[in-house]
Length: 362
Ligand SMILES: [Zn+2]
Image 1: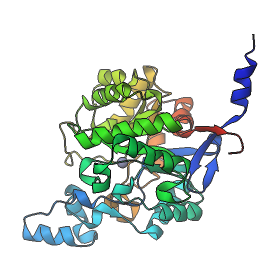
Image 2 (image 1 turned 45 degrees about the horizontal axis):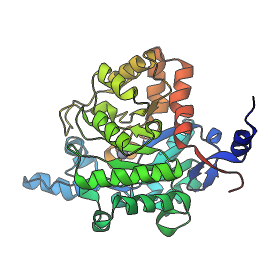
Image 3 (image 1 turned 90 degrees about the horizontal axis):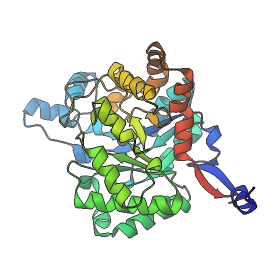
Image 4 (image 1 turned 60 degrees about the horizontal axis):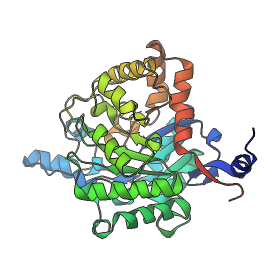
């Protein structure tokens, strides 16, 4: 028997993605990078060196003279921690477009220097779809205002950013994130997460999580989100590459139904780490992904670069936003990953991640 009432209610609903240049259909996104930063200020991570020569490097502009040092002293160069030059970033993003890219999800929250008008300029200049976010990053980045707000107030602010426009403007956020979670989770971070779930339930938007640096963090966060009533099939656990090294533990995370994001492609240094887990190289990432596809999780996998500092830009000798399309995809094929699985990771999984339901003609 056909349920005509249900048909009528779904007939009046369409799926859209909020981009900084307006709404588009999920089928128009093309290849999506679901976790990037194009304009960001991570200055709060800056650590002043004690050595006088290193201190000169730390406060100098990033050039070939200090680049070798910065590669291994990621947080000790002020200049490295800021991406603010729109013209440079247009050139960087054009490389992704020219390699076949379609959409960049810019997960920089307001407290880490989100620049919405800059994102509009980038989208117009590159003809890429750019999705902006609403979120609250790690505790040390949170503004005093956010700290005084209740989880419901944080959630209501996110709902406004998604349904009306970010920070009172007209550009609507398309995703909640990235939600910063330390290890262990702080009280302020837990409150913000509860706000994110409030906004997810009100809007249907997905939540993208930066988990703490410990293999147990994703499982604990998923349990917490679940206790808040979150839809786990609209939650991304990011940075899995540096968080969960064991296949069986990745499978356990995947069983929750969440998106499994390997978003540090191109980062291959064994000497930059802040937690107990070694950073894998790309070949190891690809092997972990291939094993997850074999275990049946291909509808949940996402891949990205999480570029957030200058040393990873191609202008500064880094891998750039086109790295996955130019170098990782061919390598994945060599590792036996099928075209069908590739299409899911690059196109259809992120389209599902970003799709929002709204009444037709909204
Ligand atoms: Zn990020």
